[in-house]
Length: 413
Ligand SMILES: CC(C)(COP(=O)(O)OP(=O)(O)OC[C@H]1O[C@@H](n2cnc3c(N)ncnc32)[C@H](O)[C@@H]1OP(=O)(O)O)[C@@H](O)C(=O)NCCC(=O)NCCS
Image (cartoon, rainbow, N blue to C red; front, side, top):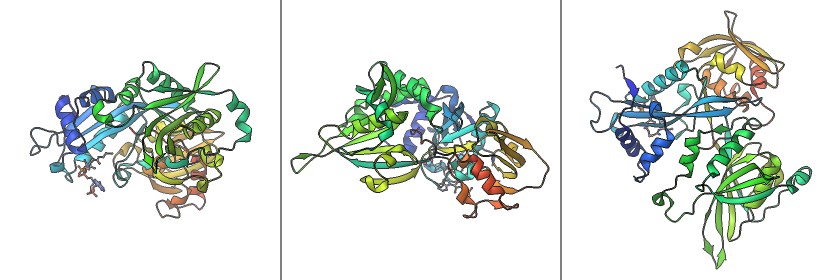
């Protein structure tokens, strides 16, 4: 059956479908979340002929965002989100139709990359998305010591300032600061101004007993050089304060991050600090002496990347090693990518050209997405997830894609 995917023209129906799929509390602020989160022309819906009348059979949306790549370029991406299928319309191919539609539209719009955060790990690999950045969640005790002798001079010039995210001007400062540092931390995803306003929107129903999200800026000579967001959770145990500080993504260079990290483990009335989004090679682990210097550490998938237009995407980033490989790319949902490509990297620059030469490798496009931000993909050959026809060719490709430091995880969207 051919399933039609169209732009959604009914904001209330679109929102109500999402509310059913995600079954959270419905609040008056939800329509504002939709307005700020998804431009009207980036909302898409499916209505199966025998589907629900009052709701859509499926919805998805795209946030226009920017992402930094190895080498420092910051490029537009399609941030796939709000993906949901009505419970009565599931397992009938609605998602397949929506993903096919998303890839075709993104390609037509000239956007080379789509990215997402996955609700469940099993969903998106088949559509060509690969896990491109991992994230650590790290618990630290109050007063954790961070040792970084070669950063101390720089840290000495940095002060911190605590503000509330919804205060006027704070979201704009955050966005400007994140954009300024994105190039130094490949994998950073920067949302639109509306997306930052959306993050500051905290209606009372959503807060309940929580405090408003606070932002701590790191400042040098009167300029913002970094920030992180946090919320304190109150708890008393055995007459002692033992609350948790939940801390979001860090932005800024290493010295700013160190100043911020010291600040968030030193807040009065708190016992534990939970860092929710720390890159695999984040300096925190070096500063505390490794994983056992933390209270606890967990690892999850962060950004999933999909090369929507392989030929356009490949030259957008820089490469730390050379390669020259012919790759047979399998791509069921973006057939314009499928077939044989000569992928090269030389003196840092990449080029992707069609070729008839014999393939050195056969792989799914999701492997290239997984490696695109610099995350190591060398193990996939041993895992039997790629097929090598010329010995050494996969190592060549994996080395070229890999960066010295693992990519930055992104904030959830
Ligand atoms: C995930 C979801 C969108 C799938 O929609 P759907 O219309 O049922 O999916 P389709 O019928 O198009 O299925 C396509 C394929 O994906 C598989 N699939 C779908 N959801 C899956 C899941 N959660 N886990 C594993 N496989 C899944 C199907 O089995 C099918 O496989 P096949 O092609 O081998 O038969 C839907 O279940 C849903 O709305 N879930 C709740 C919200 C959610 O998780 N959204 C994702 C946000 S990131």
